Length: 158
Image (cartoon, rainbow, N blue to C red; front, side):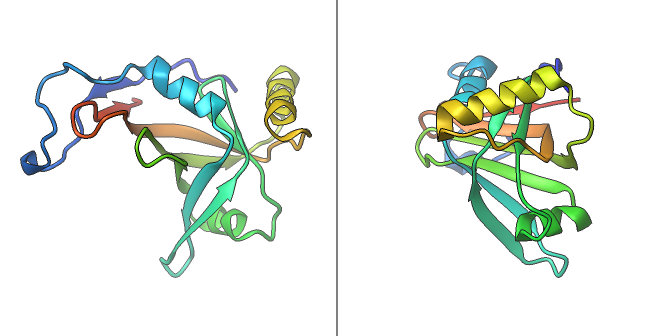
């Protein structure tokens, strides 16, 4: 599962008094976002319980081929949440150099062995052991900035 779609870049819909520029000057390039996602050690996952209450949890993961892969046993809260509502938000640890990805999580089934090998390789490098992945996130929209508010950028996939 390699995602070859390139997202379109724009400014997000944020009230003018936040100071987000109206021009493209200073917007972040997608390559920087992918590097941050690929190199991150910990990812925050946000899901929603059946009763609407939010749930966040730190997780290991791997950004491979334009998609985010992560694990979770069937009894973990985030796995149970995703069974009822596949919408997910992923946030990297920094509140200064920000990357947020929103998308749809799906169970990983019949994953290409080459992609699984990349995921396992990333896990070994970052965490010292391979763990595999049983979820993949197909991104829909992402937000990123290095310096707020001048570099705030939205990325959207069609």
